[in-house]
Length: 414
Ligand code: NIG
Ligand code: FE
Image (cartoon, rainbow, N blue to C red; front, top):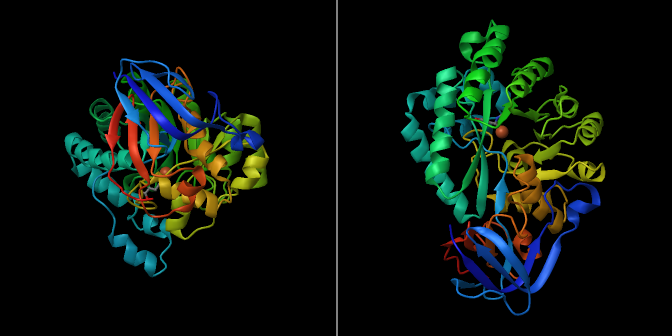
């Protein structure tokens, strides 16, 4: 692990604390001008303004730039075989996402490609994506299974995630999502697949400690709210904390369920009803919103402002996957958070750092720049947060510091 003293920080912008922030607090961040920050053994030891304290370790000059925590991408389908560019033509002809899936395409075609690949091939492909994510500023990333849909194939994906966590600088958090789609073979026997997920897959994933979370795609034609409840309750019994893809296309009760079962996060929430927001507020659920998916599907945008007002902490992530969002750039997510959700740059920063960390159970370790947290930070080719949220389409990350180690970009913007 590394020691590093970052000096000449023009502006250090960070949320504060180790818990998700909702309501007014989501927009309350700490701003330090003319700051420095010291990392020891990969962990933040101290920070302050004025003359830097601490000598004898390597020094990194931030050149008066903006510094924020590293970005937390709290929702990705990182590990998959193939891509789905063939679906672009279908989309352009107006074929809906769920129709492609119902015809055996969509997620199910990625299932075929993922089953064909070896664990090593999957890991190599995902590592290339992680390299790109790191350059765009992601330092912690959630990754789901869900393209295997058999016990062995789901475990293969999760093992690939475990291997990647060992070999790649980005920290990964694994989520089991065997209930991502109903395999063709179970079309006439849904109950048997739900039982397989609950009675075979979940116990195995837990026994092999392959995941921390359990997620379900609660959607018309995929899993009902009652099936989702059964799966997530089974996961809980085995120590897998619940997450849920809810209200992405149809509001069938996913967000209400999220609050009722105490889900750590509910994802998408594009068509989330008021009762869902109330339920999440009561259950302490983080709303993990995925604006790049709305953009890519040509769908509406989740009612982010209503959620913030109701005190539901809003996180934002990419949803990187080969179908509904082949985008891994958290900076684009930040743009959309302002332009489409109408969140302020300060609220957006909290969404992509501390609240994202809370959505994946990492708020004690990352998501803000404070002593005791991991030395994960970004030096931006920017002087303030407004600039980061205002520019679009460029990579504005100048340098990534991950656990005290530096990874430099050569953008030359600004
Ligand atoms: O979050 N909605 C379900 N799962 C992904 C899409 C996966 C895919 O299309 O391959 C999502 O959007
Ligand atoms: Fe997703």
